[in-house]
Image 1 (tube, rainbow, N blue to C red):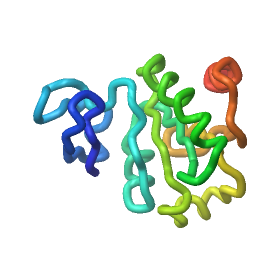
Image 2: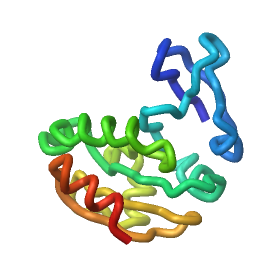
Image 3: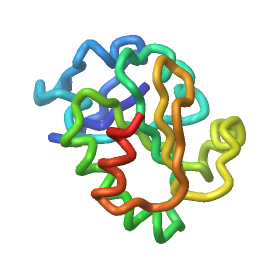
Image 4: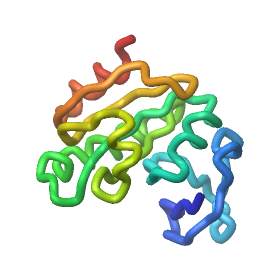
Length: 138
C-alpha cells in the first residue's frame, strides 16, 4: 500500500506484512507510522488487519460529515500518544465494501480490532477524554 510520510509528505510503498517492522520513509528516513493514522481501503483493509501484531483502531468517516471533521484532530492526537496501537481511517463513501462488511450505519464509527477480529466499536464523535477512556477500556 502507499503511505504518505507524515513528515515530508512523500509517497512510500509498504507491504501490509511490514507494518510492524517500523517502516521508514525512503526520502527523509523518518518513521512512516509514527503519530499519524494510515488510510485503509477495500483492497488493503483485511491484509493490514491480518498482518498487524498491534491492535488497530479504525475511524470510519466521510468527507462531508461535520462530526467526522470535528473528531479528526482528536483521532490524530491519540495516534501520536499511542504508538502501541495502529490508527487507521476508512472513507466510507470511497470504500463501500468494508463499510458494508462492518454494517457502518452512522459516522464517525470507531472500531478496535485485535488479531484481525473486531473487539469493540462506538458510534459518534467522542471528546478527547471519552476517546482515551474508550481506548483504555477492555
